[in-house]
Image 1 (cartoon, one colour):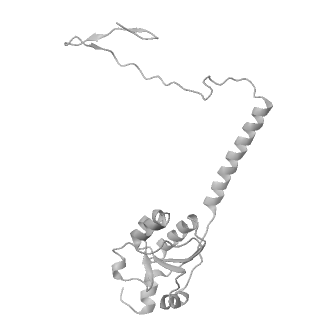
Image 2 (cartoon, helix red, strand yellow; image 1 turned 135 degrees about the vertical axis):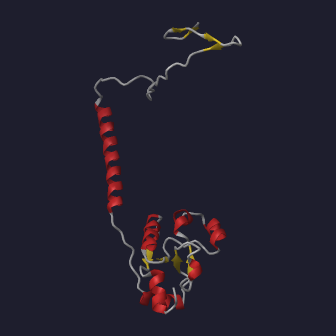
Length: 190
């Protein structure tokens, strides 16, 4: 026989004379921070004040997350005519970033552009500067530098603009016409 706190359970013997105890049902035990279960005793005025402050802070946090989620932010859009001069004489304090995948950039890239694929963009722009330079061969843009994004048709560049905004970048532009407009205006085959 196996004796447990709650009851006695008959044990089974196997052919090798080992005792096999039947499995007991799992009983969840709830633990409280204080070590004792809460009571329905009324809270002291100090406890009520602390609880009210806690609830107010939680609600403020929820409201802030809702507000940030609902903000519809669109990066300022740059046109072909505004971008063309920047590609002819690039400024070292601005970046033109192609967020297409490497196999898409085989078709070509806008002059002076660098490639950071959107599939890894969120983690790449949060890297430390040494790891970033080792991976891409150029410096990580500073948060205050002008950063212009483009892709194939303008959808992924909008996503990259939003991601950059969330990562703390402040001077963001979106070339919404992207690669398709660029090759059309430049008269190049797609």
